[in-house]
Length: 623
Image: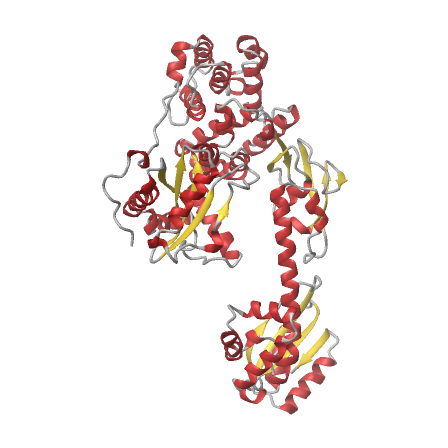
């Protein structure tokens, strides 16, 4: 239970966010002859053109320009502000109004023409989806990969998504799906996380309407998203932090529905959380504590005040502390993150960052553009997969990064670039078509050498995969080793008997069977302890009354049916059937384990002989 914040909280600790006034398109029209001319040119070019809503088409152009200006927040008018505004106003004039790039170049300069040509869709008789892919290839091949072009494209797409309800119903899903597949990835590659979340949540209800309604209801009804909780937590954290009159602002930030849905799916698949609720997801609502100071020591001090506060004692999740200040993420994200597991509420993340850090964390490349910093590191190669989908990679990325970005990872042996086989370690090229060649063995371990030819984020994925694969091998080894202790008891795997499992796991203080297998795989001495625990609990073949068979061989139809008939003919009752999937199993083969009751010693031997003489089985084990 949170206490009410004390009265008299210092002004410096209250909400410091202020909307900084900046030039709007209307104001630029009054003060910039170049923008005013572009605005008039766009109106004339699109005269008598209307959107699906019935409003003049120029409304979209003006809205796109205002989005760009809202991102740039210009306090003064310079060449960049004018050129970006002009390009936003003119971005559809080539496709929809027949204006030539040369005409734009002559009237508004080379840079505006470059931006417009980069954003313009090509005229084509192909489907809209093919046209959009062709457009991206056109941009890539022409080399129009400047971050300013990406920003303009995202502004254009954002306004189109904000008004998608006016588009004919049959076209909405395709546009939303393309936004998730292409433009969300583009926003992420630019570090524009606020824009990314909005694009995702604008697309979600059109792509998966039923899932969206379910997820939205779950999140909106979550205690952590309630006004009472967020306001109470904000005030309480300000009070805790402001004890030394430190200038610090605390704001609640609700994560996006799509982002939370995908995160829950990933964590559930990895066994890190439930698939039916968000209690373990720590950024359903996160609290961002920011300070004007750029001194990292102050951030550590702020974090220390919070996690050591008496009311948070025992609630800090030690496994979810992340220091991205001393070691920022590859995308430049910087903050210190801590998680509180609040009783009857759920996990809540608290992040600490300077105001400069947080501006970049939210806006990415746009925050650098406001400061007129060099944006070279945000130039991107665009490459196209076998489906024609675009992937945006840093200029120094290799195809190792690509295969891990797409989720293929260790299964990739090489790539074929426009028909030419190429090693994964090669740097990515721009505007190419990529087909990934895969190993036959789906269980192949990651090649450690690949970690020397990739970005830092990919290197960490590879190292994690190598560690997981090594653990999986020890788990398999532990299972195999335990068979010597289990087989005299009619078992081959502890999971086949809940009673035997409890007899070992609980007394040994282990969280689950995999942990037991892992430990046995690395320490044979544990076998004696497992045997002792089973003996003490009376786990014997006679006591359990179980018989287990395991057979393997080449996949053929009817095998499982024949096995159940063999068992039934000998009076056996099948207790359970397992289809284990050992990591070293070759393709097109099977492994079946059947646990049964009602089989005596004579029938067990008959079954064993029958199975051993069946040529379909390469391995037969009956215990």
